[in-house]
Image (cartoon, rainbow, N blue to C red; front, side):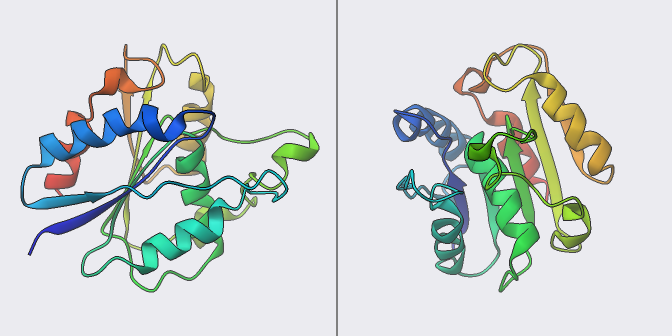
Length: 181
């Protein structure tokens, strides 16, 4: 039976289409033993979390067997928020977060995206967590990666020199980490 990998897209206009290249790279690198599931998130601008938290929960609930979660950008930050604030039916074997924003500030629009102060204590226990971030990311500043490194010292952090926000559309490094779980 193929292992299922849930991929949560990044935000913005065209985010689903842009991240389809990441999904294709990941599927190719993982091979036939894995099935990458890629639901399209529907954005509700009136909801404080754009309506994504509920959709992420539903997508995780549809997985069978071992749970492997991968997410990019806005999707990565909201996956982390979902995991910290909701009981997951099954402990994820691995959580792989690419170019993840660390939301802060007092702007009204950001309040529904921010993690609670105690989020590290509320993440699933015994799940491996990986962060990937390129130093030349022009969308999410590299200091967001550093913020997560301070908050989650037990996670694995992969610092990449170049590749921008989309990691050059190459998720071979993520695939290697998934295979090594």
